[in-house]
Amino acid sequence: MATPEFQFTDGTTLPVGTMYCIGRNYAAHAREMGADVPTAPLVFIKPPTAYVPDGGSIVIPSYSSNLHHEVELVVIIGADAENVNTVDALFYVAGYAVGIDATLRDVQAEAKKKGEPWSVAKSFRTSAPVSVCVPAREVATDEPLELCLSVNGELRQHGFTSHMERSVAELVAYCSSVFGLQRGDCIFTGTPEGVSQVHKGDTLHAELVGKTSLTVSIA
Ligand code: MG
Image 1 (spheres, rainbow, N blue to C red):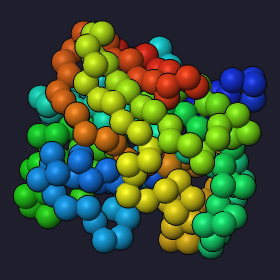
Image 2 (image 1 turned 90 degrees about the vertical axis):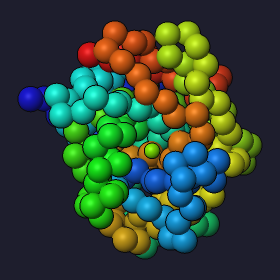
Image 3 (image 1 turned 135 degrees about the vertical axis):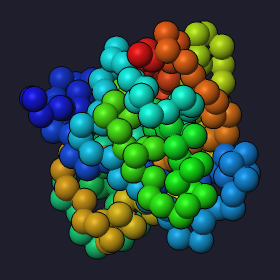
Image 4 (image 1 turned 90 degrees about the horizontal axis):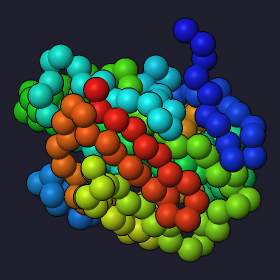
């Protein structure tokens, strides 16, 4: 299998590395899941085989009957980073994209009940569609970025990155300290409220408004 690559609007590419995902980074989504905002970032990991490019499909595994969408700002790392502080963190960002943290909610609920890891619910093949990426120089991160997601043309999620509990710089710094980030890694920064179930045959359209968008189908 060829190594998957992130595509940028300027024609450059980066090999897809480890995908770090932040849980409950929006208070309203934590509430809808009946959970609190964690005191330290809640991190899980998806492998490169989870990546799906724009126009691809999320395949529901046979062991689940409840796939949820979570629309998220995705931060693409452009240079290796270890123990970076929040002041320098954004220098390591190559660009931004919109992604879907596809989640098997039934499998996740069972894992939570048993106190088991979420990998099988969150990190299966095709669980991480990511749009074409916008170079960081074209994105002003001091203003809120707007995210939305529709299913078959009906709006389901709409939010602003200003509602994130931890900023992009804080998340890059944290992941660089705990894991060490490498060029081509990315961070899914958490989802706003409005997650819901999708079914085989549905079309999902996600937008980082005014910047880039992503269309995937459910198979
Ligand atoms: Mg998520």
